[in-house]
Length: 138
Image (cartoon, rainbow, N blue to C red; front, side, top):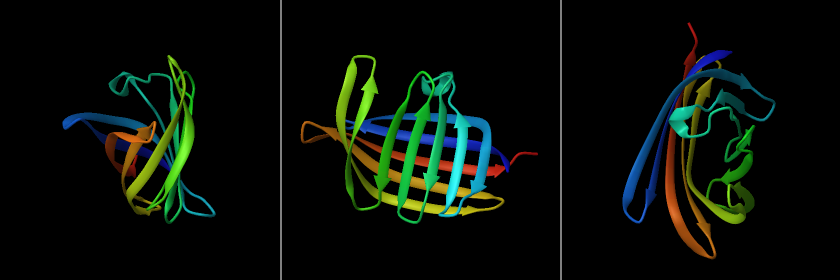
């Protein structure tokens, strides 16, 4: 389904919060295992030209970005994962820990909320909460 997607991302680093909001067109589709959300990033997120794909199952979310800012994060509720994350300064080894993954999607839209921490060198560097609302494009 063609969808209007609203993303609110909150990042906390050293007690300082930064909130980014994005409203964009994209799509929502039901897959064999769950849901897929696709949308284009914009200047608002600092990643223009990047396509974001979220593949969601009951307790796992794969976040893949293609284009000028390619990356992949595996976020699985109550589990820690490691990944290589490209930056303009080189590739870093990141650890993720997902504390919340709440998917309330239906064929006509809904919400997805997830919270996770990112860390490197054995420490936590930032905490993130993402709230995505999907509604049918009119």
